[in-house]
Image (cartoon, rainbow, N blue to C red):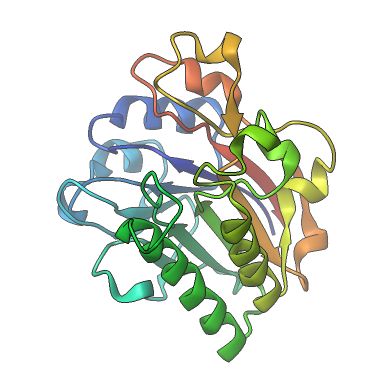
Length: 262
């Protein structure tokens, strides 16, 4: 069963309902995973999505912050959610497709501004979230699974616009990259995007602070698509839909796509 999956930090699904619909109409993924929905589940604007064929949804939400949702043309079975790091945040949800593949949608904490947990509680929460993910995967190794989301880490040198300048900037510090790689190893995950696009600068996020984000192009690859090694070879067609970052009132993230044949 071939299907195309996308992940996108939408930065408020209600505020950006229109561009979600634009993406669904123009790119038509079978499954769209959203992060930072900033909405209780009951207030997610599902009617317009359903009218476009996305009548299945599994989500976790909260007012004004966080929130994750999986929209799908294909039937979904709610597989629950985990409260990583015990934060009480809506940052994870899982759903199973008819072919038995489980999709995990994550919104990892951004981590604040100072990469030191002794003076920055948010950075500690981020590291704790990643540590819990690692423990969870070691305790119950996933099979036939896909993990997507805004993981808020750009792990490779070519995932950021300037490796040396960003080594002390949260999202690219060595301690975060080490934790990121430990999570990946614990679940035997494969970075599908980089399997398809192994070389070259690649970004999925550009700061709102840039007057001309496109010309400055100081991006980071914070949004990821992983698959367990037993199904990773079925993935193809990975791409970042960069032009979406230039839409009116956009998210600061662009959608990341991959196609699977399972």
